[in-house]
Amino acid sequence: MIELVAFLGNPGREYAHTRHNAGRMLAERLSFFPSLHWRNTYKGLYASITGNRLLPGDGCNGTGPCEKALPPTLHFLMPETYMNRSGESVAAAASFFKIPPDRILLVHDELELSLGQAALKFSGGLGGHNGLRSMRACFNTPDFWRMRIGIGRPGHDDISGWVLSDFTLAERPLMEQALNACADALLRALIQGPQSLLPEWNKKNIPDAGEKP
Image 1 (cartoon, rainbow, N blue to C red):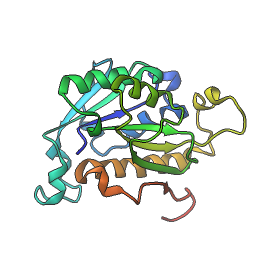
Image 2 (cartoon, one colour; image 1 turned 90 degrees about the horizontal axis):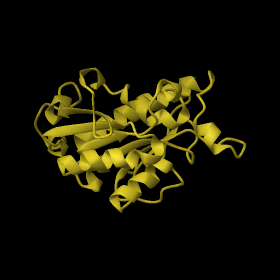
Image 3 (cartoon, one colour; image 1 turned 120 degrees about the horizontal axis):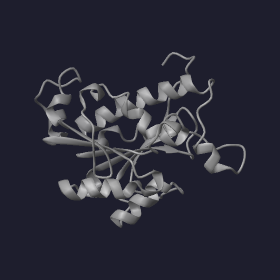
Image 4 (cartoon, one colour; image 1 turned 180 degrees about the vertical axis):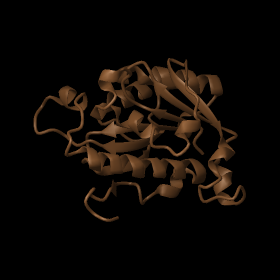
C-alpha cells in the first residue's frame, strides 16, 4: 500500500520542462491532479486526497479487492530542495505522517532507460541518481518504490548538461505518451497496490508516438 508519492525534480520555471523533471511533469497527467490543493510545507509543495476519491470512474465500485490497497489519505509531494537534497523533503513529510519507506513511491527520471521506456521497481541500486542518493542518505535504506521514466543516455559525457536540457521537439510526442502511460500505471498502483503491476512494468516499452498501441 502506497501512502506517499513524491515527484522528483528541480523547482523553478527554468527547469520545468527539463529531462530531470520528468517526475514532476508526470504529476500534471494524473486524472485527479486538478482536485489537488498544493501548499508550501515539508520543504516542498504538498497536497493530499482522501483515498476513496480515486475509486469513482477508475474501474472500482467502492468495494472489492481494489479498495483494500487504499489508505484513508494519500499524500503527494514535490520537493523544493533541488534534486540532490530531495530526500530531506520526503523525510520531513514521512516523519510527520509516520510513513515507512516501503510505503513511499518516488517518480523520477532514469538515464538507464531509453526514451519511451518506463519501469516500476522496489528497492535496488541507486544508479548514480542524486535524488535516490539523497533518499538513501535520509532514510538509511534503499527500500522504497520507484517509478522510473526513461530519458536515455546522451552520446557524450556531459550528463549534468543532458539531464538539465529540455526535450527536443522530436522527442516531445513520445515523452507525452510515456508520461500519460505512467500516470495511468501510477493510478493503478495506488488503487491496486504496486505489486499488481509486476512483472508487466519491470521494463515497459511505451509504443512509439506514431504507432497504434
